Every structure is written in structure tokens, then in C-alpha cells.
Image 1 (cartoon, rainbow, N blue to C red):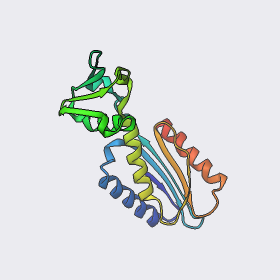
Image 2 (image 1 turned 90 degrees about the vertical axis):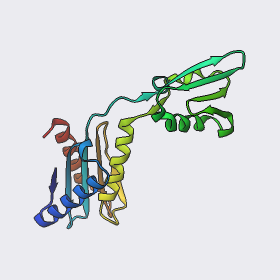
Image 3 (image 1 turned 180 degrees about the vertical axis):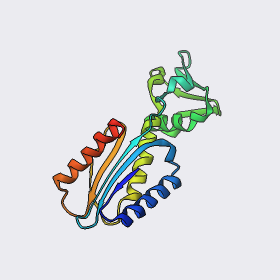
Image 4 (image 1 turned 30 degrees about the vertical axis):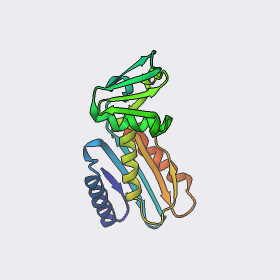
Length: 186
């Protein structure tokens, strides 16, 4: 972790704030590296965080068995891994009302019609979940009042420039430097 600031004490304070927020959100083991730039004279805060690799997305068909009962015109879903049931229901509720999903027991769901094509739906995306948690941390870290934010994030790096003024090109360049350094592992 590197916090750049001409004021050494200010850099230390921000480092403590960042560590505390990461600890509160249990993010320490999910982040490879972090670079921040703070300049109180030029009200700017640049932050770039490299996320660790996560497991692959979990598809509906990997945690549930979908079969079509032609005689009843129903898709029967047998849950293989109950841990994903809330995610499965959330995805189904996006497509159907709660009344359209019949749940005779905790391991079985039924829906009218043939929906076996749902096997390829993503029910859990660890990368997206981690990214969302990191954005939560970023918005807690940013100084109060810095409402002008430019998101420069890439696939594995969450990067933002924040200020309470117009964003300058040099700040965006700084963020791109941080992204390049994090990609190279510096």
C-alpha cells in the first residue's frame, strides 16, 4: 500500500483510515495492492485498488438440476447446493412474480412453462461481488465533499479520481499511472 502526499502525517492518517475501512469490510485478503494520491492544496484524491483473482461465476445449472415435465408443462428445479437458493430465487424473481414460483419444499421449485434454458444463468459472480464491496470501501475512503468522481476502473482494478472542483487532466494521468503500476505489479 502506498499513499502519496507531500504531508507525511497526512499520508499516515489516510493509511490508517484505509486499513481500518478494509478491516471493517473484511477486504484485506481480497486486495493485492493499493495506491492513493492525496493533495490538500489541490483538492484531489486518486485511488487505485488491485483486486485479487476470484473464482469463476456460478451458473444455475451447476447448483441446480432443471427438468421440464411436458405433461404438466412445468420446469422442475431441484436445488443441489442450498447455499445458492437465495441467489436462485433472486434471479427467478427478476423474471417471475413470487406467485408464479411454487416451492413445495426447500430443495424444489416449480415454474409453469419450459425454462430449462436458465441453466446458463449466472447465479453468483464472486468477481462482481468483490468489486461491489471494493466500491463500497472506496466511497467510505473518499474525503467528505468530494462529489465529483471519475471512475477509471478496469477489469481487476478499481480506480477513481475525486475532487470538489473540475477534474484536471494531470489527475487522470496520475490514476492511469497507478493502474499501469498495479498491472505490472510494482
